[in-house]
Length: 154
Image (tube, rainbow, N blue to C red; front, side, top):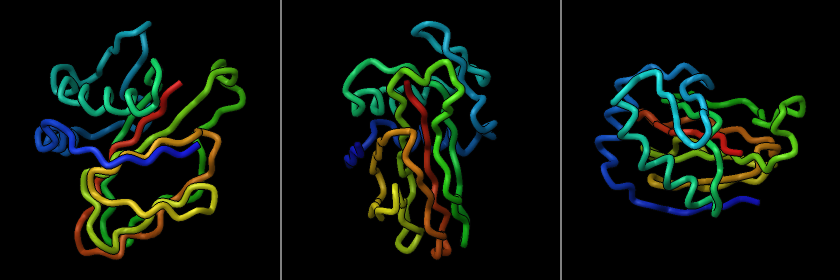
């Protein structure tokens, strides 16, 4: 299952400024408490609700946010093959999804590859896929930064 949709976010510039102003501590930014979130960075994170809700809407049902983070890929930056599924997790019986939103995707900044299938992506694209799927990115061959927001849901 791979869902791919181009969506223009409301307040995209404000969200991007929030992301650029926070050093995301990978995989530990957000903690679930029932259906609410405890954010480590206070009111700045409120700007991210729009993007989180867009992912949940794309998923098509009520998922919990497990964690989220942002990455900036400078020239030649890329991600090695990996997946986000943890077979030892107490969530292994729940459907787990991973997603990425492309804030900045300059030409030649590298495709996303999921299960050995190249996914051509452009700015404002949301990609949602099964967390068990292996994925990586091709290197950013642009002189401009690629900026993405990633999320895990269950």
